[in-house]
Amino acid sequence: MSKKKIIAIQADQLNSINIKTDTTFLLALEAQKRFHKIYWYETKDLNFIKGKVYAKAKEVNFFENKKKYYKILKKITLDLSKAQFILIRQNPPFNMDYITSTLYLEYLSHNVKIINNPIAIRNISEKFYSVNFLKFMPPTIFTKNIKEIINFKKKYKKIVLKPIHGYAGKDILFLNDKFNLKKIKKYLNKINHVMAQTFLPGVKKGDKRVFIINGRVKGVIKRIPSKNSILSNLSQGGKAFKTTLNSKELKISNYVAKKLKQQNIFFAGIDLVSNYLIGDINVTSPTGLKNHYDLTGINLAVDFWDTLEKLK
Image (cartoon, rainbow, N blue to C red; front, side, top):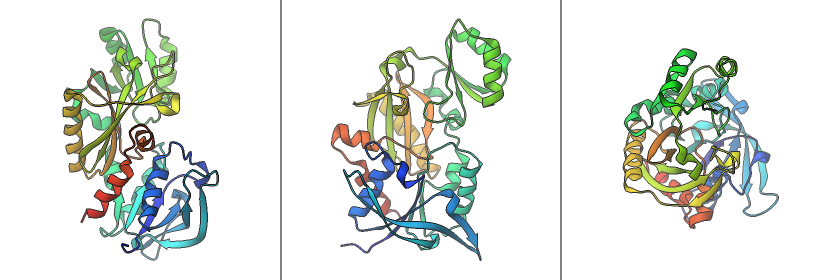
């Protein structure tokens, strides 16, 4: 038996987990199988006192396939420098609370491995970072200028607007021949900067979510939108299916994976449609591992921890 390690997980409320789909739960279960101690806390629990970063944390034991899926063993004030690993797993939005939590964690010793690296998360906008991969993408611009959007719409006819800091398929706007200028202005006033992208009809047949661990492509699932929808996100009613990558998709995925590793990103998810990268590069809290496990029988949480524990 290996020596127990302290695993701190920064996430949302314990009772908000959907154990049927939650990636964090799968990662925690695998850590527990390795006899590590798991401490759970939220961003509101972070404190910086006398030169140290502390979290008001709960030591937790998890149970697989049970209605009552966790037990709080005790509550402690955890000196996060004592943790061997910290997983940043709270869901977006990527807002000032999220950014502030990365400032706390950045202060910790390099002896604490934080996944993903807080500086890297702060520097990589999940959509805007895709400007580094435009050669693999459909025509795309980033703007909050209504005239630029109208010109883009005139050129490409059908386009999609996505908030730069959006997540889970929320606030995505599809524009075709019938669009309301007043509605778009109102949308931009609310959302600010957006990614405008040529609509890919192939999205109705689904997208592919690719899982990347430490610069290597490890798995993929296909997500198909529900009827009369263009949103393949599982949280928006999309369904997951087993799939593989073709040679072009694999080339794109390997290229992006290599670049993400150079940026100190350990765990990521990227999305492809019709042989294109569509610009969603999920580094804040990648999801989908449980769906992949259910579809393929391959538990990438094992790969995650095998790889992470070997890192120096």
